[in-house]
Amino acid sequence: MNDAATRAKVTLTMDGSNRSVDLPLMPGTIGPAVADIRKLYADLGIFTYDPGYGGTAACESKITYIDGDKGILLYRGYPIEQLAEKSSFLEVAYLLLNGELPNAAQRVEFDRGVVRHTMVHEQLRRFYDGFRRDAHPMAVMCGVVGALSAFYHDSLDINDPEVRRISAFRLVAKVPTIAAWAYKYSIGEPFMYPRNDLGYAANFLYMMNAVPTERWVENEILTRAMDRILILHADHEQNASTSTVRLAGSTGANPFACIAAGIASLWGPAHGGANEAVLKMLGEIGHVKNIPDFLARVKGKDGHARLMGFGHRVYKNYDPRAKIMQQTCHEVLGELGIKDDPLLDLAQELERIALSDDYFVSRKLYPNVDFYSGIILKAMGFPTSMFTVLFAVARTIGWISQWKEMIEDPSQRIGRPRQVYTGPVQRDYIPVEGR
Ligand code: CMC
Image (cartoon, rainbow, N blue to C red; front, side):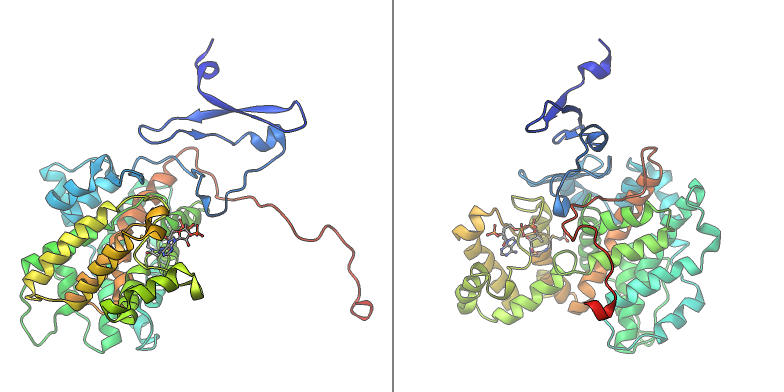
């Protein structure tokens, strides 16, 4: 008997016929095995139906692993808690992109590679003038990041590994500059050019907060908090925006266009827009005494109200990132001398009440990464419209790592889902006078 014959499989039998098919099971290193259905249509003439892809693995990946029941998140095997405590964002970026933590020399070279690319083409500055000052910065991000592909004609050959490497550097390095400029544009302040003597997180805070007329002083606690927020958001396996990047990339589109597609997908309130929505929700609730009324509306599904920052497609337990966020939140508020933050008090009370309410408990709805991130970012001076932008800055390394993995995967094909067609059967055209 050969290996293939002994491999685990599931057998699918068509009701009312004696036709069946063996679907080989592909094991992962951890997590459930997946049934390989590629031959299903050829053998049984049927497709599978899975709106929202809740039970479908669209690719093989070695980057990130989530155990949603246990609340575990690993980047390349390393627990998120250890990385958040001991590592730095650029080291995590190296890890996600290359598969291993860098040694000292690799780390210096990688950091230098990113730093060398932080400036954007001076012509790109002019793009901002085309936007209204009150444009949402995510709209500016979609446009300006997409426009990068018009500037790098030398790096559009995705089959060249060196091009893929440089594109990753360019994106990770330039996205903070583009993001900070979107903010500066919205408030009418001069753009601050990147400072390559600062670390990645500090440089971002500098470009966001500094003005040319004053000396900017780095606050190491806030830099560390920002670095940790970036680590926590860096990747999250096949979520909506990452799947969007992979789908766009599967057509051979250039990486800048693919990341712009990812940014568009991240924008929605069910995904990266949730941190902005959490603050809006807390503002609407206004006071602890209004929590029961608000939760009653959520549970009654009145007007599609949801408890933003709660629930997750994969986590059916506490999101491990939310725990670290909560701790970071206390550190940041402590550093900023904010003793009683009414928003934090409200959020904590909301969490307490929700976690003892059968509606949320029975549906396994727990706080996700976005529940506390908005409170930290607000305390650090970020306007709510920049929250999702910050998520995009952090997630760029995850998107580009997943894109690179996909391009280098020999089994990669253009993404092309099927459908159940429920429209009219074939019929003949009727001229307008006969309708
Ligand atoms: N508030 C109230 N009810 C909820 C919520 C919520 N936040 N999330 C899910 N439910 C209910 C939902 O109504 C449904 O109830 P029922 O079975 O009675 O119809 C049940 O829980 C299952 O929900 P679902 O819509 O099937 O779950 P999903 O996996 O499709 O949605 C989600 C996941 C994240 C979109 C959703 O939980 C949600 O909208 N949460 C609020 C938005 C949010 O915080 N998003 C950030 C996610 S973490 C950051 C990121 O990855 O981008």
